Amino acid sequence: MGNQIIISVSREYGSEGHTIAEQIAKDMGLPFYDRNMLDEIAKEKGFDPAAFASVDEKPRNKLLSRRVKGYSNATEDNLAQMQFEFLRKKAASGESFVVLGRCSETILKEYDCLVSIFVTGNKDRKLKHVMEKFSLSDTAAAAKIAKHDAYRRRYHNHYSDFKWGDSRNYDVCINSSRIGVEETAKLLEEFVGSVKES
Image (cartoon, rainbow, N blue to C red):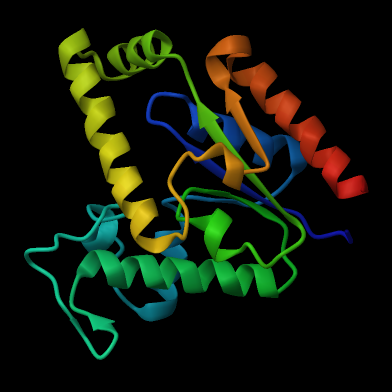
């Protein structure tokens, strides 16, 4: 496989996929790209990253956007394309990294060194995590989970050629509720190590 490894982590809201992806990056000594890539893109393009933060990984509003000759006037579309370009450049440079979401399992699928992961979780564990993290009632937490997962599904399905969370299109799908965040990260690191050696 060579020395380059790219780890794409997609996740359900509340599954702690973000924490797991960060842990993998830390343990393996790899750069971690999520919302922080906005800062690098903003520096390169010369804009304020705060202007795009609210539409990061969000689907475009169909009523307020249009495409003309392949170009979109939607901020969401423009940000997504900038992030895809950023990831493609990083991959083409030979850099190894961990990336959270951003349709990276689709954008970078041509790379043999790509390992794609989808993190899910039990409904009750996800609910408890979101309630504790944001000090929400169970009703409010459930609504937050449903809203964020709907956004991610629409975003992913708009830019990808397969459905968000469809296990047939990831190398690994794992339920983080079964063994917890730390053990899930360790198990995934072992899998990545095995893939890298093959």
